[in-house]
Length: 441
Image (cartoon, rainbow, N blue to C red; front, side, top):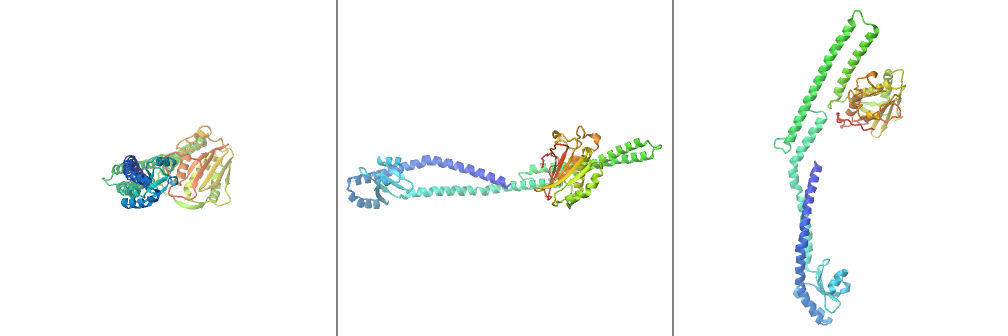
């Protein structure tokens, strides 16, 4: 808002100054030149008589005559050599031709005494000095008027300023998850209609999110109830199905249960008001403590941890970090040929947690899609490998809730995902959760 005031003020003052300069230019071209010509003609008569008289007198009588004439005109009079006058060549030629020259630097009039190389110098003339002083007075008045414009502009902009500030504060609170926040602008405000529209949008957004949460909870409850019944009836079947068929049914029921859990997790993370349960942790030690659990997902494949010698202290929601790394490491182990690497490093104000595998890799052209929910890839990374298609979408939600991001890095072999987290969790953690940013760290 301060920038808006400054821009508007500078624009108004600039336009005002330009208009005054144009008016001054017209005045200078017309009025000042006309005044100078009138003054020259007026002085030409007096100076012409005096220089004509001096031309007829011997030079020895000039001082007495000039002293007498100086008292009559009440102006200083003196005589100087034409060659010594600080004039341009054109002005000297103009003066040598018998014309009057006005020297603005010292406010004097010059006219050559006919038949000599001497010049009659009249001045400084008070009127010319007054014109110069009046010029600076005009400049000062223009500056004072320009500065005085700031007060009415400020008085006019102040209610708009306060209204925009309330809109900005409300938008920030809504962005931070407080959907009950309202602008509360008075009806007479110039931004009242904008505020009411914003409040209506917030109310609709609040109602939509509440309805979606109720729908998600209801669907999860309604789906889990028949799952429990199916497991019970499967256990009560008599005679029991073959072991292979029973294991297939258990796998399908487990996949459906995992899908419900993934959907609930994604729905919770999709809410901007999700509170983080922050705690302090050293990332290297934490990853070492979780390494055995991740390795148990695919014991036949090798999982390595690469960390720098320095410690990596971090503050954030360790529960969500565990879920994000488990999804990335689990995907890598599922698609790797034989080896997965977890690398942790510090880069400026961010930690880079990179998970790489030696599997078939991912087409870089598909990078903008893989973090969207329920998106599956072709070739080897498809539905046959398991998963609900929500793992990477959940990782991105977790990263953004911490003010970070996740990206697919270029890799010569296999796939490489980098989870970028700020070293210090700041208040700017609520990034747009629906915007697909794919900036690589």
